[in-house]
Image 1 (cartoon, rainbow, N blue to C red):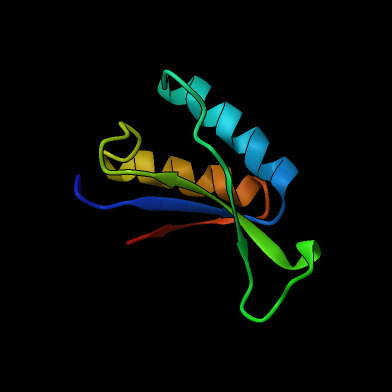
Image 2: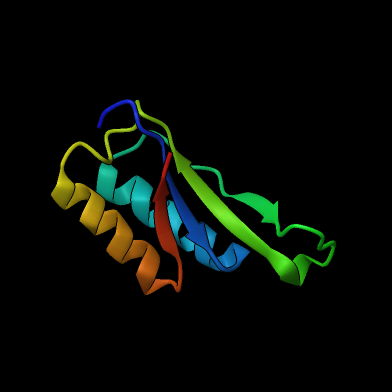
Length: 85
């Protein structure tokens, strides 16, 4: 599980920035994760974008199933979801 990258997918920039700040506080990160805009396929409009927060395998955020559940709940609280790759 430690070599998996986790991605919080959020509906807008404001939600992504709030989640990034909350993650930094909850996880004791030295800096906030940087939200990244992902345009939906074939769309140029900023309204048609998702915002991502990528937690790399080295981020101490996903070591246990309970921690993953907490990340998923946090994303859901902002109308988003958690993906792993």
